[in-house]
Length: 235
Image (cartoon, rainbow, N blue to C red):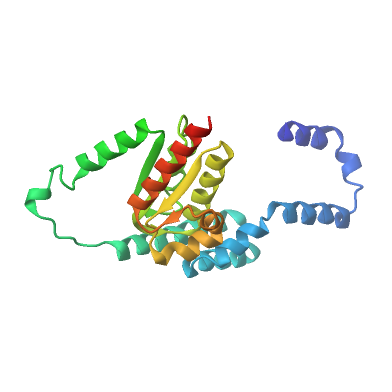
């Protein structure tokens, strides 16, 4: 629709548009640009991590100095380099007993059976493992945002190794969407180094006020079961 209107203006209303003072057009552009900027998002990025703040400042300055296409490429390259740097720093080596590999005592099978049991109780537990940054934030959380037929979602963050401002923002938006659909969201095991990033993105303090942030996942599961039982009793 916008493209069709612009073509109509250029082909039909060109002579009339040419009479509009450039100062007036500049005012329209300034007002449009101001509405495009999300100041709350800028504040969140500046207060999240130094890497995210650096990307914001670099792209902001480059937008004024360079052309827009170059700035987009520069922003992607800088953000990607910082994300790879964070992933490299988060790599760890952990010794595991051979008897535990592929077993059911502390391996994947025990987690799977536990999560299936929770699903029968209208509780879904999602485990985040590895990095959650701008490149994979949306894909990693898309399924969470589309959860249906559950009453409580537990976000298990203890194995999260990297989190940037965009990943935290998408996570906060997912919490907001789930709560908007009447789903209670619990957060468990978030490493202390990511608390500030989550707080800057929003919803973390909201979850804390509701006592929905837990240091241990078993505590979150117990709370979820009490919540489902209480709702079932009310209905």
